[in-house]
Length: 158
Image (cartoon, rainbow, N blue to C red; front, side, top):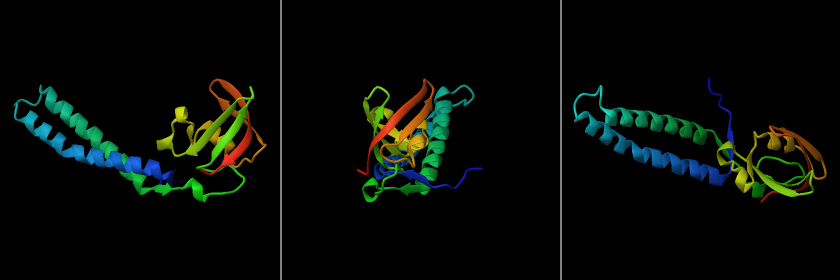
């Protein structure tokens, strides 16, 4: 059974989810038209267009249900309204790795994560290790490639 926990996200992530939901809802009538057109071709047992349209309809309905659930449980967090000296959801954290290289991550919702842009999910190993920590604390993270060590240099709410 699904839990009714809130799904934390930034405002831009919420906007993207609602845009995705609108696009899927707009696709519904086109799928119905494709099913009707395929039905008109006759025998449904060997009608690839019909089966493809029905499969797409199932995928779209499942995605709509998933998005509606996330949107309904969304807890929108604006990092600029946050403050403090501990790492929390929405914080942008500047770290120093073992090689004295600076890395910067923003802790975001699962739907917004993009490691290439420095946005990591709050449920990722690095974020879980960082949450609750303060500047100048060392953090050890176990990742598939082994243990990594970081020093927290700066915590920002931007």
